[in-house]
Image (tube, rainbow, N blue to C red):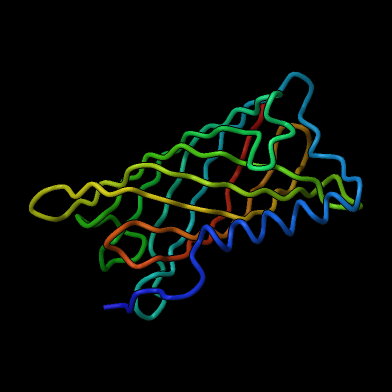
Length: 189
């Protein structure tokens, strides 16, 4: 069994990164990622891998969701895009293959997109999510609170298509924390 994590709590790390980002943005005028004309909705599909078990054995982490940017949240330091997502994670012993031991997570989130200096093709984002995880493969389904905090980079091919790359810190009570590395496709309208 993996020992419990006793390092920096996720919320502390996230707040540090947020303060670092906002303090550097206060010093430099950065144009935020320009949304396509009239577009404020993102549909994302993100296959990922967990590296959480002994030996860093990869596990499937498949995420699909939708997000909507709200104009009245543009100046909010925490986020301007509300998201709804579903994630399937394989917790069994077969890597990416489906097993009875899995986690099904429905989560609400808030994402903050921010521009990077001297480029319009790349933007950064932070993403906080909270929801419910259902753990299967046991005599009965175990429901647990889910908390995920991500830091990512978007590569924009045009106004409507982009690739997201992110690292997510995941925490579910009674389960040791774990990291998820993901890359996904997003279409915006």
